[in-house]
Image (cartoon, rainbow, N blue to C red; front, side, top):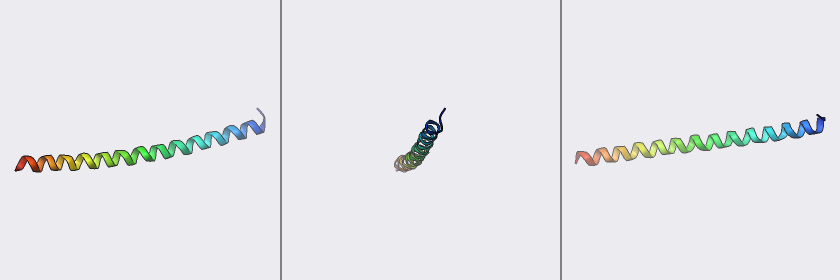
Length: 51
């Protein structure tokens, strides 16, 4: 494989890795937010059941 083709492939792989890392950060942030919302909803449900 020529050096130019290899460099292009390596650049594309690096870009894909960066994109995947960004997507994982978004997923982790979304999961944390959903967990927080779920916790708040359960707290509200619990407090309503006490009244």
